[in-house]
Image (cartoon, rainbow, N blue to C red; front, side):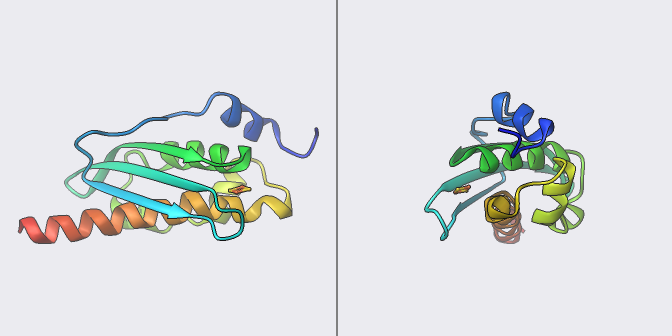
Length: 127
Ligand code: FES
């Protein structure tokens, strides 16, 4: 061990916000071309603010930890602010990831931007 920071191990062992949101306003699903892992992220939005966020990941420990961290980071943020969260920012919030695991953090960041795009599409249709 010793490859991962304590924070990564924490979020890996006790991931936050695992599951799905039944009446989600946006859903993002992404696959990681490097390893084939997949993740699905759900957001609930009110007045363009993310009020809830959950995820499901079939992926490695780093993917689970970054997904868990990103769900915490976006809550209460407005969607344009949330879109700016990069995979690097998530990795930093976790105290860093080993370089060979950086691709895993793309899953969370890409999934989130897809979910936000999905929300934007849907709200356009409603209006
Ligand atoms: Fe696939 Fe980490 S090894 S997301």
